[in-house]
Length: 339
Image (cartoon, rainbow, N blue to C red; front, side):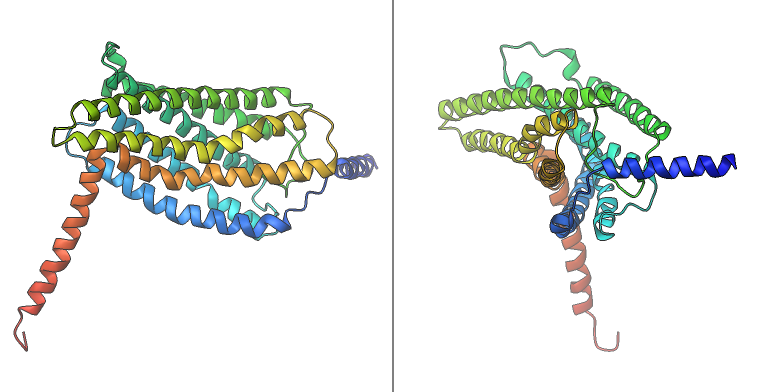
């Protein structure tokens, strides 16, 4: 009798909770997400694997920027591995079949690696600015060994935060476990909302540092190219200045729209918002998140622009492959009939 009564109460509370939830219809944008994430997964996976292979094949000792770029490639690959689960979710008509805990693991891993990439790009910009500006004494933290320690500390804190977030979600009971990557009210989860505000604030600090440092780097390089216009390598300085702006443009296009809208999204989660606006806010947030994920495809372009060692290594690998293919074809053409 008591077990039946408990079951009835549970079913009633489940129905009441589901009644208060808004049914957000994502059918109109599901196809867009499937196509976009599939393109990002294929191109990003290929580009970052090639870049990672190039970093590992660098023969000489790696400098601090190369170590940061290597860690950006690892973070991008981990983010890309989350995309098939998002694709599968939208293919299944926005139905999650792998359980609440795994949903939280995939979602947290996605955001964790996105912000690791952002912080590492900020560290790269500071590293380049200090090395370019001769008026600043080069501190010891710009050495390759110190950059390894900084990356280890960043990954350690990220993994601890990841474990704590997943463990906290494991304790929380949610009735509708088939929903994932969806809009959730956070009026009772203010600590999580504050954490999201902190991450957005970190992004804007990194972004302004990035703008200031790359503008200063470009100005210095253009001044040097004008002063040394008679030198044969004067054009390299202006090319490097242009590349700095390309890196800044990539970062701005991918991350700025998402983080401008992020304040609106988090604030709406802390307030009573109508179902109509929840659906609009959720769809806008997911569309802008696609642009953020697209950064993992464009980062390999940044590796080629910022690291001459990566360019040389990739060209060497291509040349070796081409030379091997041509030598095989030459040896076949030199064979006599019947050989």
